[in-house]
Amino acid sequence: MNAGRLDFFWLALVAGTAATWGLGESGAAGTAAVLGILAIAALKGTWIVREFMGLRRIKFMWPALVIGWLLVVLAIIAATYWKGQA
Amino acid sequence: MNAADMALKPGEPAGRPVLGGAQAVALHPPGDLAIWVFILAELLAFGVFFASYAITRMHNVALFDEMQLTLDRRAGAINTFLLITASWCVARAVAAIKLDRTRASGRWLLWGMLAGFGFVGVKIFEYHAKLSLGINLATNTFYMFYLSLTFFHFMHVLLGLAILLAVWVKTRRGGYSSADHHGMETGASYWHMVDLVWVVLFPLVYVMR
Image (cartoon, rainbow over all chains, first blue to last red; front, side, top):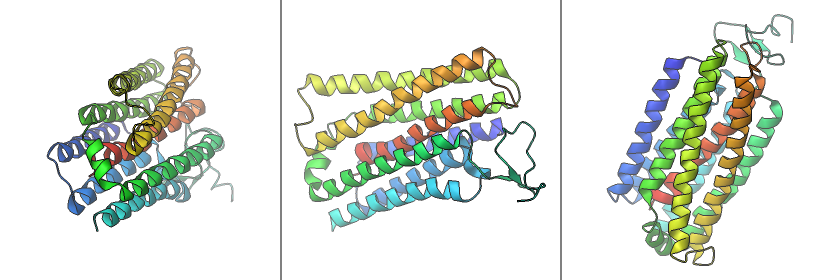
């Protein structure tokens, strides 16, 4: 586990959090905003799983299970928001 | 699996065989396998909670959007920063112990715990603000979800902090090294799960509308 790599992804996670908060503060709403916010959450979650949890170099099944959970949950959320706006 | 496939990396805990090749791939995730079964069960529970929130919101969009504006989004963002920072510190602690830098590992764990306690403080501030306004589980459907979902997560943060405290004490006593840090990785994996769940919870409850 490379310390510099961990530092880089911490900064990326902080930037992602700032972007999500900024979208909320700007009053962004609707399909594009929701998809943008969910995409940021997907990126942040994937970075945590691969870099901090250390699943980057683990046999496929384990990262697939955890990242798969993340993507399924985000897809369910996206579907309900899309249906709620329809 | 042949003998070459069973070769261990230097400093790799026993029971974590790696496959050969330039990009070695371990068969098992860091820490105890039992904690990963627990983590998957926890993720399933949170997943059901998130789906329930989203489906209920789908039928009550106006109420959820109106009530979301009464939340302290800045507190939610600060707490996201604190949890991400705590997770980073814990990852740095694991990286340090793999180099036998025991004191540095202990310091990273301490910073991680401080960030975690910061999260607890901000969350108590948020709960106090809502409860002092007479808001409770019965106020409406949004607050039933907000209070129960965030409190369920809050309890996981407290358990994570108790685990990190135990890992920190053992680290201070020299209980971990580059050759044996299985316990630290087990505690770290649980803590990262708590962080991962919040990364979904924050935009879902505080931001998306």
